[in-house]
Length: 116
Image 1: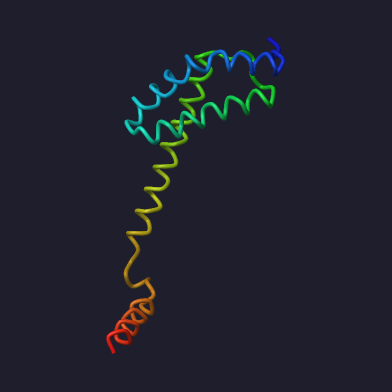
Image 2: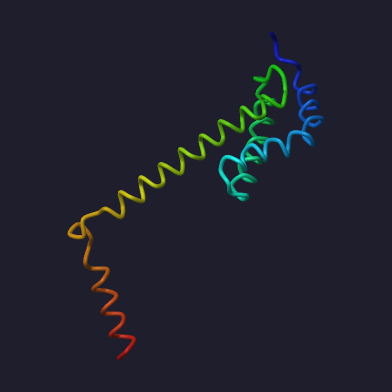
């Protein structure tokens, strides 16, 4: 099955947009339960769809194809969240003996200077 020319795919996406937008948003919102994140991911879905059309890798623009993109964007989002949480945990679990005490010394000196 060969890819349909880009212009036809772009038109299909435009024709499907009004119907697809609430479907894609609803799919994402139900899964992440955060309006802002769902809105951002919905934007990423449609930007990704346009990018795929521009790269001529789309066989057919359908609702299922857009929901598939949404699923991948959501998985990527959860991976980023998990990665960020691991990094935060690693930073908060640092041994206090590894921290440079000079920062606190500077704060004390600054406080004394200001109070003086």
